[in-house]
Length: 137
Ligand code: HEC
Image 1 (tube, rainbow, N blue to C red):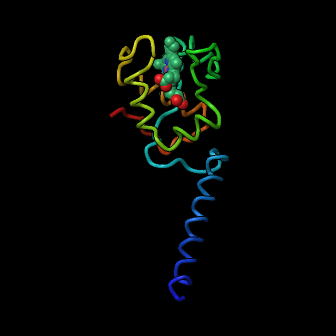
Image 2 (image 1 turned 90 degrees about the vertical axis):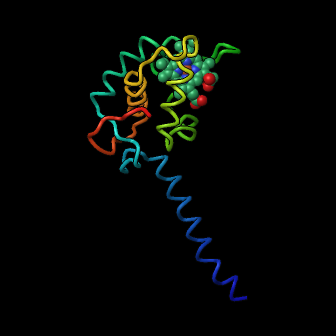
């Protein structure tokens, strides 16, 4: 039965880290951002222009999303967005660069896509991890 006793601290540790991850997701502004979240506030400002020109028509002026039947554009802020994308900024970049705007994918330059990702991270209150700009890969 010593095997059981040895396993329990590990399980506790796993439970504890899951819990802290969940807490972190709910109070993002109080914690430092994970690696990969480097963007500048200047980038987030520039990205607003990109957002207004290329995204707002479908995702809404406040990133609230649209709800008009088959072609719903999801909200880019809030809990659902958070759980899909918060820990994956490069995947978010790739999704946007490759498939958005949905009616004209590929129109954004790498810089424009990186800037709009910064704007979206900012809107989700992700605290930049450093002063260096987010680079698309
Ligand atoms: C013509 C309408 C339209 C435009 C313009 C558009 N989108 Fe989308 N977007 C959608 C639709 C519909 C989806 C859901 C289907 C999908 O994921 O491909 C989506 C999905 C997304 C997602 C995934 C969201 C999630 O949680 O699954 C992101 C991120 C996104 N769009 C960002 C952008 C950005 C940034 C722009 C501007 C560069 C943009 N979109 C422009 C319609 C649009």
